[in-house]
Amino acid sequence: MTYVISPAPTPSVPVQGRDATALFPVRRIYCVGRNYVEHAIEMGHSGREAPFFFLKPGDAVLPVAEGSVGHMHYPSLTSNLHHELELVVAIGTGGRDIPAAAALEHVFGYAVGLDMTRRDQQNDAKKLGRPWCVGKGFEESAPIGPIRRASDCQLSADTGIRLDVNGAKRQGSTLGKLIWSVPEIIEHLSRAWTLAPGDLIFTGTPEGVAAVVVGDTLVARVDGIGSLQVQIVAA
Ligand code: MN
Image (cartoon, rainbow, N blue to C red; front, side):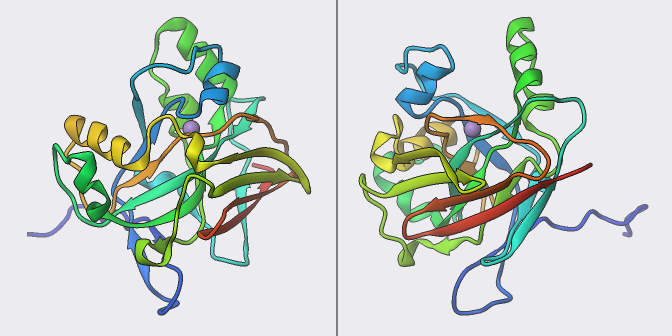
């Protein structure tokens, strides 16, 4: 059998450490909505609700190597492009109905990511009861730094997460402020979908989301995992 057209290349993210050429192949990108209380409140919600999910296509990743600057093209159909700083979980072992107590066995590693959002499109979709695909699932909408193996990460409630834009702090929190923890997210997500190796999970953003424009430089960090630098460039 042969393909009638060339298959698309597999999107991938570099893995930190021992082997500089190691790549993590990306399958799906799952995202958690409103997972920090203060961000839920800034978006007009109480902060107390069950987790919900949306997806971006796997090829929406914009992988950025440690120490380099990724270039994100300002997307079409928006005049309100927002940053959402997030911890990203990379799934190494799949499964369904995974209990929280066993969830961390399925994690390959962690990275810093940005859930870039056409906020005007997302807000219109919310008002009209339409899907969020245009607001959330466009090309380059998931800039991500290198993945650090879970065995090399020591995450705790005090682990800091921070985003600076043009050198000024925009978002800052700690992982202890997540409404749903990483094991709980995996438990809920794996009831709805069978998780597979290569899946990425964007775990939600803390408060402080705001617009960026062409020329802005974003530096995102999660303590003990690494950093991600992205410049917004003209389309
Ligand atoms: Mn998000």
